[in-house]
Length: 325
Image (cartoon, rainbow, N blue to C red; front, side, top):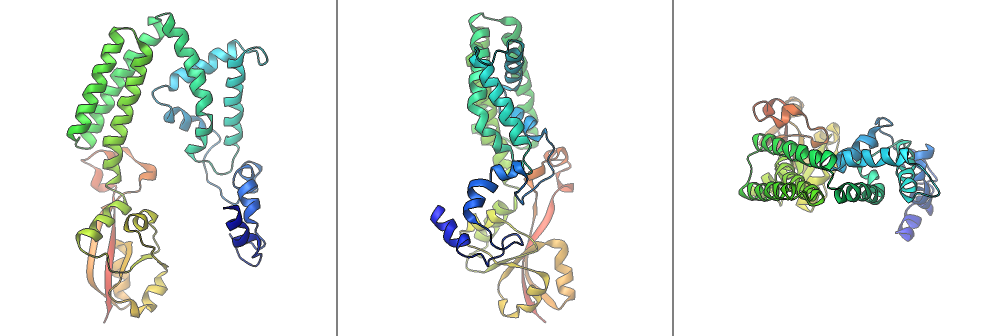
């Protein structure tokens, strides 16, 4: 990879990368891609707040979020950096999280680097309370989590019709959770609740959400209508997922380039439905038009999750085949 970066960029200072020349691929990889985001030398930016990674971390470590908060708080109260290993770990978590939060470009998976530290902190708290059969903390916490999970399952089953596998795994996880609570084995209770959330999310919620994405929906459409042999062009839109599922690259075209590509009759152009009439006004005639409702999963809203209002939140995108008048 280093060899490739050097030959692709460092040996070609005349290339333009993000509007700049003399860009070093090695410098980008070893400095700008990571530390450069904190130092402010990386060109990539997003508008996430300083606390973005903090609440991302709490979501990513569900259902153990409250335990890690308690672990950190207990460590602060008993803080001794050089004598207490837990305090050292807690400091590592906070320092790394603050450093990552100073980055100009923040993505949730950045927090994965501190998961091992969080796991040790939580294990320390869980073992301490579990050995004491602490009904006051772990008992109430586990029972509350189990009730919340039941409610979440009900909501998810309302949003999307569950499969028999999802229902079966859900029942098994709930049964184990109840059994472990009765035995006051709270560590296994939390494990079963974690499995329940994982099963619910990855076998039910994610597949149903994924079915509404551009890549999945249009890939199925292309295969069902035997359109695999046709060239597909993206017009002011993009879908890397569609390219991945179809195992073929698609050229990106501007509005003007579509109008000038008369030799591409028989090809399919991927665009928003609202753009189709404008192309017709500019002299192109629609031969075939395949339109589907799609949704951007980067910002899932309550309105989309509600099946009664979902139709108001989707967009219509199309694969269009033109011919000239």
